[in-house]
Image 1: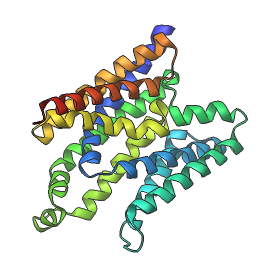
Image 2: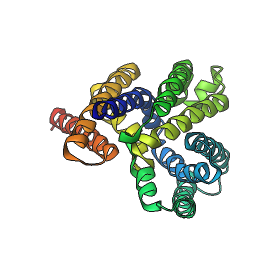
Image 3: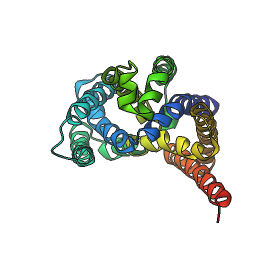
Image 4: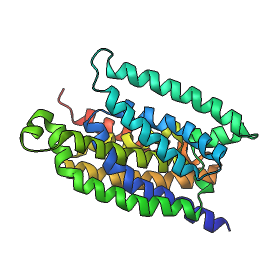
Length: 266
């Protein structure tokens, strides 16, 4: 029995690493960390809705994250209020609303809230694994399809548009993929550390990479190693799985930064 839940947890962690790491490169390149954090925190509302309406929480989280992502794209078009301020308002509002909603729908709200915030990788089910691997395959396929136009937008959005890239369509498709990955990863690493799983592998890989493809490759390797080592530490030391994975990622990032400083000219 122990071997089964460990194998499911490991499969979930490795599957998410394969999906999140290359996607996280674009989050880093496009400086969308705050955007990802806002979307992930709205997942609390999605979980509460799923429980309250007795539907699959992954479906309700996906619906909420996609809806919020589209709203953020719309709000990003206005110029009166800075985008980072809009994101800050929505992130904290979503977190507060999610906590209140969770308290209303669950009699064991403290345990549920901790699970949503920090993940519960060892409770991953076979159905969760289907979401990760089947949905993840579609997400990776979409990312491969979007790879060239997204790179062009990262380099220079106006130039990409002049070269025939449909910027609005490409951005919307990328946001949908990001929202899906956030919805799936809530089960594993939780709302508050989901964005770290997207950002840290890419940030750690950047100093060692000379091309976008190299950065995606190294980010994936770092994410896979962190998932495996973090789960081993979590199981042996009896600490939460999601935060353990993120702490391993942070250690890899620290080594990456130390190597960068060591190689920097005096």
